[in-house]
Image 1 (cartoon, rainbow, N blue to C red):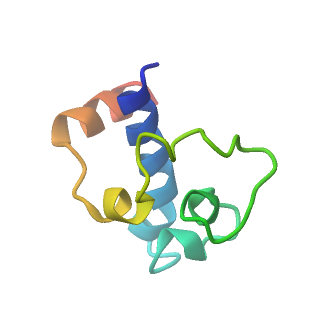
Image 2: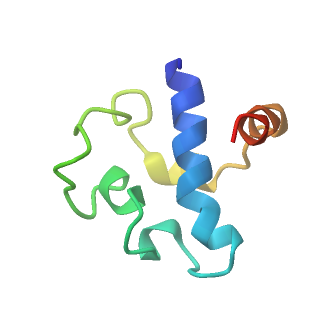
Image 3: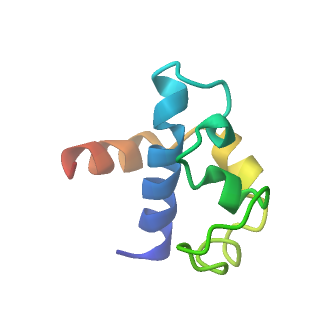
Length: 78
């Protein structure tokens, strides 16, 4: 899995509770890695550098509309 695919997959998962109407923002979901990626808390299970080097402003990435083709690929591989 390349870095771009990994980032799309992580964003897809982090936005699932938002799409389901369980929270307004991804970091509001207690079990989400979004808080870690946004720098709001540290999760020892997630390598600190995992996405921050390629996506230093994760909030901008989360808020950006996902690429439709990438979403199709993710859904096809669920």
